[in-house]
Structures are given as structure tokens and as C-alpha cells.
Amino acid sequence: MAHDIKNILEKYPDFKANIGIEIHVQLKTESKIFCSCPNNFGDKPNQNICPICAGYPGVLPVLNKKVVDFAIMAGLATNSKITQKTWFDRKHYMYPDLPKNYQITQDQAPICTNGYITIELLDNKQKNINLVRIHMEEDAGKNIHGTNNESYVDLNRAGTPLLEIVSFPDIENSNEAKLYLNNLKSIVQYLNISDANMEEGSFRGDVNISVRRSDEKKLGTKVELKNVNSFKFIVNAIEYEIERQINAIKKGEKIIQETRGWDSKENKSFLMRSKEEAQDYKYFKEPDLPILLIDDIWINNIKNSLPELPTQKFNRFKSEYNLSSYEAEILTGEVELANFFEQTCKITKQPQKTANWLLRNVLAYLNENKLILKNSKITVNNFAELILAIESGKINTSVAQEVFAQMANTGKSPNIIIKENNLEQIEDTQALEDIILNIIKNHPEEVKSYLSGKDRLFGFFVGLAMKETQGKANPKILQELLKKHLK
Image (tube, rainbow, N blue to C red; front, side):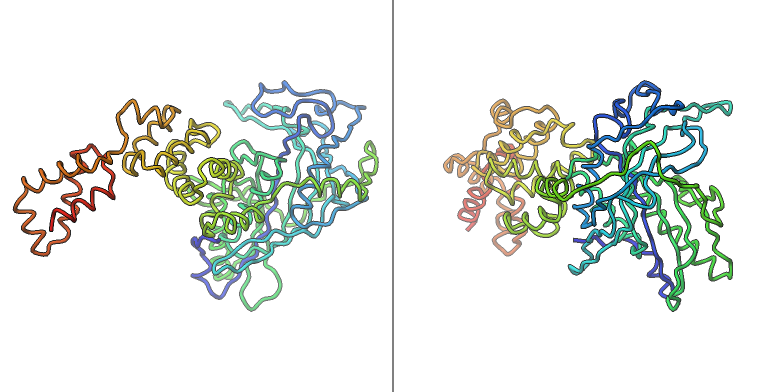
């Protein structure tokens, strides 16, 4: 289900935008793409390097088969055609973090072509965002800029395996861009080929934006936005850049093909470099790697081992657990959350109550404390125990909020928290009746007003009774007794 967010083009009905996105996905292999160095994030600089990834003369790369497996998985999951005779190329450019002065990538024969990713728009309408290609390549190192105009090069990232996923300019606004990116991120996470962590750079993208008048068929001149590192910033950058180009066209200015960066503090793009002509990287076939032949057996083995993908899980959650599209969309957006939900349901047999508490309480707690599920103290077992305590009537919903807060902060069992704090729900009808009769006796004026037609005072009596029982009264029994005695 799509969520309606701002769309700058609503202000300019005489203009259209075309947006293509190039996403680099770092793969979760144990070693790098062409050598046996560890593929780890966050290690000390220049610790995971060898003569191959450091670009020493005369060394020979050896292809990591797992990278090819992951590329085929991504291709099948995005409805792509797998290229069965493919090869690598050299892309030549000089930069400090590229020690060979060329990058091993794919140019003429990408491993996947002609795929698409489906996004769900408002009113349950669907749209396919077509893919130009998915190809394999190695990542470059990283420049670290210090003080006094000094820069340092860390080559740990050099040789990290990448998939570059390139879309056609089928995306028409920032809303569609966000939906596309969410779906693509979910796919690679469900496949378990990447953690897709944007903060660590394992899912990073360049956005190409062009604007034209609505009656023009030819696409406008594209402007590239480089390395925008969050979905929020991508949305903001697209909105800004579309409006910037529209205002320039209305003034009669020419849009220049250029590369721009995004300043998230100032909320505006800035010129990085002009790019009037496409850069000539002087590609040629990589002579040190053989042609790669992928047969039907290889493809079918991977196809038969694919996990359930986000769209499949979304549809199943709606039918099997009777969830709304909104609930199913959020629960299946992250594979960890989807698995947590299903594991809890196996224990509780209460999918709706489980979904409600996950969506309202758990996600709110994680967002407030800037945590993810696996780094929190909320486990399937203690969360299921809480749901069962509510469902059995052991505690009411009000007390459950307090139990949840303690459980989330300490990791303690809800049953232990309930016992230690004497929070078990009061269901003794006689005890509750004595409390209610005493409240009625002590508030004759309020009783008189209620009986004269001021029905809202019923909540006043409920509040007093809950206060008297420290929130532990069974709400249903309490209200029935109040209605009986207030007559």
C-alpha cells in the first residue's frame, strides 16, 4: 500500500519528471570479489588488503563464485533475464582510492537484464519500474579527509563485491522513488545477500532527474545527484531538484548535464562537476578473467532455493492472518520484523493482537530509542508471554503498558514483572463491588448529575475505581458493576 507524501509536481501541472536510480548493493560474502581478503566493515584501516585488491602489478584476480550466485538470485527476484554468456571489463579512471587505476566491472554483457520491480500506488494501482541491468563489479577504497588539506586512503573496501542495479527513468515523482527503493531494499534483505545498511554504505545510490514540459515527448537533460545516503534525503533531494529545474526552464535557462551533491543541512543541491559529455572510460574486456558461462542447471538450482519474497509474504500475511494491507505492508517491510511476527504468532495464536502491539508499542519503542529488534531486549518469548498474559485476562491493557515498558528496558519475563509488582488483574466481583459502592456513597452530587443525564460522568467513576485498584481492575467487570449500581 502506498503512503501519500508530498509531490512537488502538483504545483506544476504543465511539467513532467523522469527519474532513474542507480543503486550499489554491497554483498554479504565472507571474502572479496577477486581475492580471499575478509569482506568486513569497520575494521582498522588497511587491515584487510593483499597484493590483488591493493593493485600490485602482475597479480591475477580470481572470481568469487558466491558473488555470481547472489547476482543470479537478485536477477530472478527482480524478474530479470540471466545472461548465460557474460564477462568482465576494465573501466579506466584515476582516483586515489582506486589503486589499479581501473575498476573491474561489467559493460557490454551485464549478468542480468530487462527486469522490473512492481510498486503499489494509491488506490491499489500497480506500476512496474523497469530495470536496464544488474551487473557485478568491485568497490573502490575510501578517502578519509583530515585537517591541513591532508587525505588518507583506506583500501579495506577495495574489492568489496557490488551489484549495481540500474533502473530506466520510469519513476515520475519522489513518492514512486521511495516505494521503489523500499521494495528493492526489502528484496536484497529477504534474499540475505546484503544487509542494505545505508549508514554503512552497503546500499547507496545515485539519482538521475530530468524535467520536461508535459507536451514534449523527448526527455529533458538529466542531472545526477550523487551518493544521497538516506531515503528521506533522496525524497527531499528529488523534490528540490525537480523544482530547481522547472524554475530554470520557466526562466528560459538551459539545463546543463552535471553532477550535483546534496546538502542535507541546507536542504538543497550543489554543483560538484559539469558533465556536458558522457565520460569516456575506455572500457575493454578484462584479460585476466575468463568468459563466464552460466547454464540452466545453475540457474534452476538457485531458483529452487529462493526464499519467500516480500510481495509473496505480503499477500500471504493478508490471507493467512487476515491483516489489512497497511498492517501487512509494515510487517513485511523488514524481514526481521516479519519473522518476529510469525514466530510470536506460533506461540500466541493471536495474530491481530500480536500485530497491534508490534505496530503500536514495539515499533514506537524502537524508534524512540533508536534501536533495531535484534539489538533490543525484546525477544519472541517475552513478547509472546506478554500477549498471552493480556489474552488470558491475567493483566488488563492499562497494566500491560507498564509491564511492556519494564520488559523492554530490562528483558525480564512479563510473568516475573507481574508477580514482583503485584500487577495481576483483580477479578474478584465482591471486592470490586465494595470499592464501587464506597465511591458511589462518597460522591452523591456526581451520582445525582449522572442520573440526570450527564452520561460523561461514567468515565469519572471508572477513573476513580481504577485509581483505587491501582489500574488492576478487570475493566469489563468494573463497568458492568458500575452500570448496575448507578441505576
